[in-house]
Length: 450
Image (cartoon, rainbow, N blue to C red; front, side):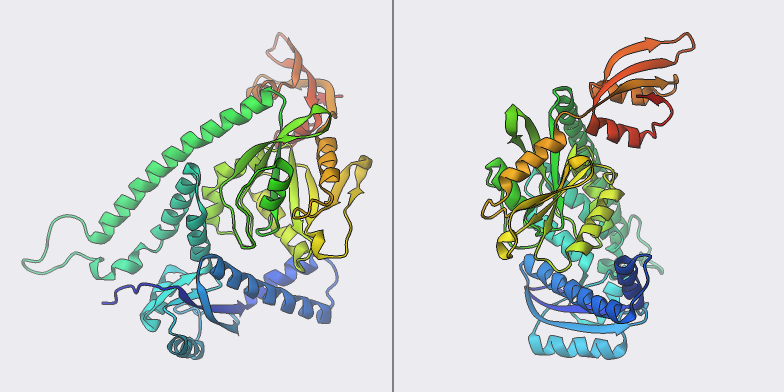
């Protein structure tokens, strides 16, 4: 019988590059264009190095001391240990030299791979997803944030429960040894499922409260602006700068976790609500995306997304793609965006804005630390939110009651005419941002006459 070891603050990192990972990097960087083999190979090397550096930052953000990092390549992961025998011996030797009692893998491990590695190495073994969950658990401060993290952890643990109870998996057999009742594994699994059910019920109540708050803001005509971006791009620092708040910010991954809503005063007496949301990361664990879906609803329901990009990050274009992929997965892919290139104080760039279609500002270069470019950014936000409206007539059949209710909730209906067959003609006078979101969600086409 092998009892699970207890980890320490000394961690050995293992990052193995596989063929699947290489293909994913190539497809995400070259897209559908022609492939320049030499350039592609150089780019992949840079991206791999950036991924390893980010993995080390994650470990340090969790409060761990990294003793060494072991790298390697494989065509495909070994089904039993993820790594081969030679690499396993290398890890074992590094553990002996560094005295580390925790091994972190930069890739996702199956429950059986984690268990087998622990049995071979006699130390605690975790993968990248478990590390991110641990960081989130450390940073959660609000009530709903703690609930969401606990739910994500339990859902992750449910697939790994068997590893800690191999000696209690089966009831003993034989004469005089067949006892009634549950095994320890079954008891833990039942308790875990009951706790998950409780957490989901509490989060449902939190979600309803948030929806009520959004509905009240919609009725009062107050716009919502959500800050999004890759973790450590400077969102919280920018949030503090433009709202005069003091939300915790630091030069580390996932420095802030809980969403924060504050009033944002714009020009000409215009006001909005600004939301500072959790930072995204490449291959964000599905458990976290699912658990934080209610929090991320602030992003999906926003009138404008301020997408913060670290201008000094060599991987900034890839980071933007990763953020947009997560936004698409939570249903926020169609929300209008304003790009903000932050940290120009670390470059020779000067603060300026860029105008796109219809002379709207689509990008701004600022420094959240020094305040350079902030006034122009606020004017750009006000311009993107202000004034533009859509008017016309929308013809709805009797089965489109949900859309009708949402239009009334958004204060977009000025008049309603009901026909004898139960269909309705709605006179629409709506904010352009709200209308674009509803039109996309409900595929409004020929039903609308402008």
